[in-house]
Length: 544
Ligand code: VG1
Ligand code: CO
Image (cartoon, rainbow, N blue to C red; front, side):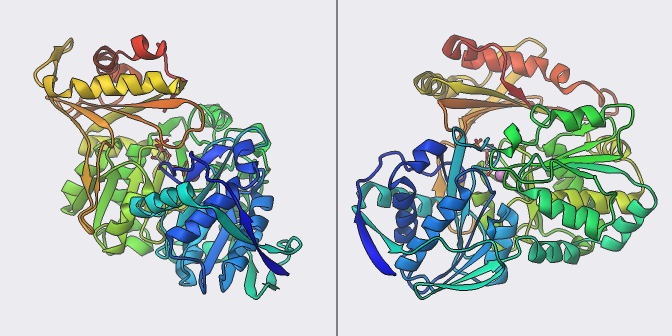
């Protein structure tokens, strides 16, 4: 086994986005592409020498080969130990947990998350810090800087390492610990929730469907829901992770988890349905005949978290990403706890969680989580819902109805316009940014009048770092809101995300179709931004 230093040429497109570096799989499979990025990660964290890292991925195509490359490079760069999930598989929240549990120096997660997988689809790599959370902007900027100047990387000349058997192997002096990807995570979940109460609910005949979308959560959901909680065998469907997710798009929303939606709105619907994404950090929650929007889910979880043992003492505070609806703000106000608004992406919650400012965080993109790890956590959200259902003994529909009666309803929707030509999308955003100053006072039909418009900037209250241009906000006098930003996780052209919100205080008008309730706001957004004029698109590709 010899350490080899390989000369390489910099790639100019290795800038991490909202959550790590994501590219088409063939781009990642080019000679030296993955290697350059991994060496740049090591550079950005001050080298790998003597470090202990966690490694795992969502099992998508190229996951196994990439893991071997990363292990060789970690050994050649002097890492002391790598804890790797069996077969190089770990869900993102499980990886975050292992990083924290074993007090490591961070971890590398191989995933393009909710993006499809396969030889022609997407692959991704991200680095998580010793706190278990995604690298903050300063670190991803340092990675990007390193990718632009590196000229060589180090690797070890050694055959593939057997990652199929749990146990310890030595790789050129580096210790590799292959661990069960599920066990520690399942134990953590058991410590947070009242498994006895949830088990009793299942025993009494409660039914549920969990769609793992042929992605990483299958084994986790089977172990926790079916084995430990006694849900009926077959509760978990699409539970075997596949390299191409069986052709599914592992993005848990009503469009891509259509089979689950159909079942939940069908005649034999179970009481509760849920789905998770490629790497297990997202969740969609559906009741019998009722869809729970992620922003509402966050608000309901915050309002009821005290019913679960881990949160019985109350919440320190809550945080939501800026585009997420203000529903959780109303809960925070009611509870008299702090409420933070951050840019899109879980990395912005890390400091707030570390400092004990908040207990629960969420994003409108089907992400919810708490201070138990430093990532959003799909199964955690499902279990908190189950714990609440077990205690309240009411249906999802009843719980939502009561929530809206108490707090009012924030009608909310996100419209995605995918694969727009990048130049056109940039021109649209530039034009919009250019007219923000003149928007206040402009009025539209249906009594909509703009109160203010800006480009969201965030100053981290803990370390003072500033993030600019995080999305255009157009706020109306009646509390309605439009947000527009371009996605930072796509791999093809640009994706416009248009976020729409309108508040109904009740008691009237709490059960409208969100698309109908939002119609005036949608029309105003198109008029202000000229979406069709710029992109040629009238209708969004995905509505959530
Ligand atoms: C999207 C979501 C964002 C989420 C990110 C990563 O980012 O909007 O809320 O944090 O994906 O989620 P963007 O830049 O495309 O809007 V995951 O589950 O793909 O890691
Ligand atoms: Co994800």
